[in-house]
Length: 150
Image (cartoon, rainbow, N blue to C red; front, side):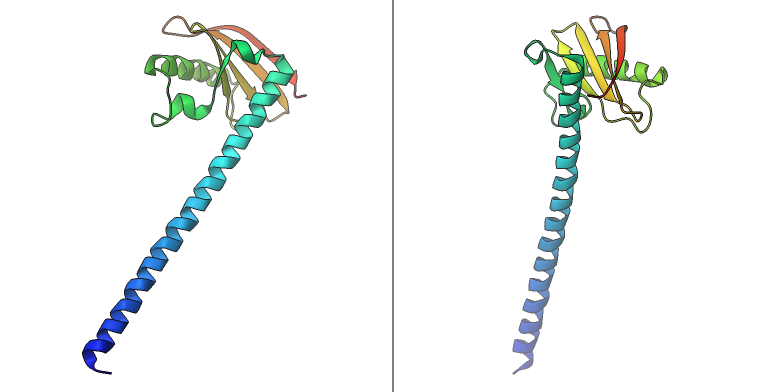
């Protein structure tokens, strides 16, 4: 085999190896992201169902928003103003030590454009539902209920 053929063969093998390595790495990364994302969605769906069951929420009268609907600019369809009011309501729960590290990610239930409830599953196996009036710039806490998880 001449030198030119030898270098072309080596170059082809190296190029193919690089392509396969890049493909394998991005495939493994994508699978990891999908697994984490689907686990996150599973946790949110479980909490939504738990809150509906525990607090007898009429799903026909509310719009369910997940964490990504409030905090992820790329996927949300809600207005920046509404998202700001919901994040302010969550901040109030954090300030009041109702939402603490270890609690599950909250689920939001919108009732029209003026009322919202935030459901949280706590570390102690209780579930809380806090209702807010979000008609003004600053949300106003109306009601806070804590129950054992059903």
